[in-house]
Image (cartoon, rainbow, N blue to C red; front, side, top):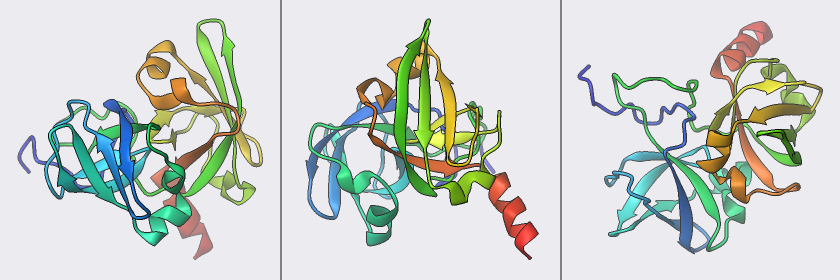
Length: 198
């Protein structure tokens, strides 16, 4: 496969830009492009959800939202002005800076702690405990599409240390305790669970 070819629907969890919701209807959102290259039909992760570019304008791109997407993610809660994490799909030959993220959200969690610890920020997220076996201490998790390393993993909670760069270049700087965030657990953990269930 040639370098530069896009791997549709595959991401790294390294947010490339923070866009702003410009317009929304029940089934479509318009998001500012923030300088990201985009093409009709391209895959873009919006808050960690793999969406297809349905329409382009000079400074914005539109995405259609299926009923499944609205029921399983936080995208249905977006309002005009909200900030969203954006990542175009991975290209062959690009560095995998985070971890493999498919853009298939497993569940929506809730921020329970967001507090400063020296120069870093402590993030704690609660989630449905039935997904706990998909999360490992010092493993990987995507939170609104951000590749993070969980620790203090419990039955329905985990914590992450947020370094200043991540805070400054993602929508975490606009988040508050109580906000709902999309969670995608490591694909390897899902395959291991599937194998065990057979």
